[in-house]
Structure formats: C-alpha cells, structure tokens
Amino acid sequence: MVGLTTRLMTLLTGTLVGRDDEGNAYYNAKARPGRTVERRWVIYKGDVDASRVPPHWHAWLHHLADQPPLEPPAAYDWQAAHKRNLTGTPEAYRPKGSPRNEGKRAATTSDYEPWTPN
Image (cartoon, rainbow, N blue to C red; front, side):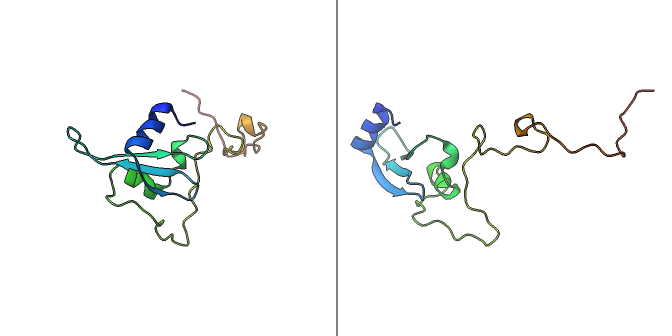
C-alpha cells in the first residue's frame, strides 16, 4: 500500500523510468535548487519488500549506476534467477534438525566426543 505522501510526490514530481519483471515501478525526480542529487524511488507491486528489487535496479536506486537498467543484464548459465528473501514465510529454508522442520535430525555418529575439562 502506497502512502498518501508518496502518491502525491510521485504524481507531482515523479517521472516513470521503468518497470522490472515483477511489475515494480521505478521513478525519479530531477535535482532542484537546494538539492544536488536527483531522487529515485520504487513503488512495489504487491508486498512492500526491499528484497524484491533486482540487483541491477538496486544499483540504479542507490546511485551506483547513472542510467536505469531498462533491460536486465545478460545472465550467465550458472546464475540463478533473482529471488526475494523468504525468511519468515512458509517457503523459508529450514535445515534438517530445525524445530520448524519437524525437529528431526540425523542420528549422531560415533566419531563425536564431547569436550570435558581436565
């Protein structure tokens, strides 16, 4: 949900720069007197979660890139697709032995010796 202030700022001063694959919209506002840097922001489609911003758009938002990435950079064959942070969701990674993963873990092997002080 976009706040009223963000909605007004976007309507009055924002220029749509582009959209990513998830439908998030990226805007900027040119620098004005008293402000030396243009402002850049994102309006999320759906959940507001910063981990949903792909790396190339993140670089543009934080002024690490001058030009907006209108096309995603070419991916290497070993690269996985961008995925948002799943922590706190049902899809989150739960290792074996985790209490949230039914609390089951592999039995210990005989090579384990607990430390005992002398």
